[in-house]
Image 1 (cartoon, helix red, strand yellow):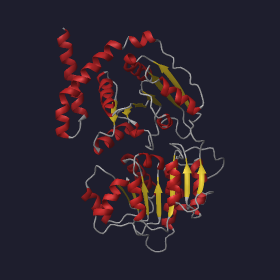
Image 2 (cartoon, rainbow, N blue to C red):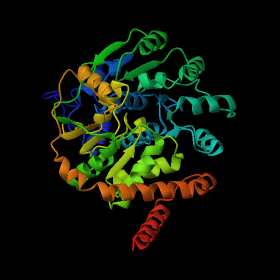
Image 3 (tube, one colour):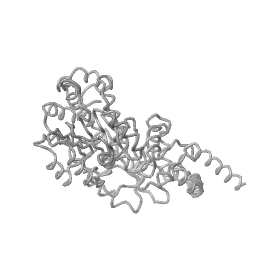
Length: 435
């Protein structure tokens, strides 16, 4: 984890020996900017409000002080010592994994409590009284209401991660309920990519005399990110996407679309053309979403087709390229999407495919980031050579979606291997009809 913090080290920030060893094992050589600014104040016992871009290392910024405080407890560390609230299931699970990695040498018990998972199994895990709980607000409130013997009366630390997104997703009621069920005497860390009016209101409601730390300017993209755009007719957008992905064969790519339906359609089109693509969206069941994410992380599929569910927080460190297949109507979402690449000092590419209906949104993005982006160079004649194959792949993919819609509803999700077999069958049938 590289940074611009000079010769500063985790030891220099006051991190204890046990956690220094954990950082070393994770390959964290020097603290990131947000860690360098946050950790000393947190170790002094201050509340923190941190503004940091995605990929800045803020999980370490709040996890290290919590684990150090846990180690410094006299006698047996209390259960439910800390609670982290996250806006999405994937991010909650990822934060939990990071806590477990940092605390593996000190006997840490950490669990994630998210929707889409059996409540009874979670109640059993809560009964084992973990030290750290990472949760989505809705499911945590469910357990506070219905799980016998569970409470957060012993809580010493509360973390609100991605606070702007927590509030944008209308979790205000749940957060209020959680705040009413935890001790007022506690340490609170609030981390957010942006400082909105809602975040400011939440800060005033639940933090005491906080230290404000900021790792970046309000809306910025990192210097190691190469950003480009391409004006394309909407009818040729699929062909341009295939062209770019083919040109960048072997790269790890995330393709952002506007709707859950288009993630599935695009992934089928690309797989029909021999590219290793997999979708992730809010419509998928939790096991399917995690399965897709794990396949992408493991390199089994090098193209992740996603909605904005994957634009914030997920730790996917090896993304080479982000493609905006659809331009976001909220220009701030562009910052979060392209922040999936060029992380922690690495380089990356972001290409936006702008059709005739999205020009105004794209101009708003350029205004927000304060720069005019260069055009992605591609010979349209070369791109259009792909059009027939791409159109055929799209037709077959739409047939597949139509034919399996009923089966998907009954089974509760897709089976990727079954999809691939079905696609192969449809392709073979289409070829024989042409003959």
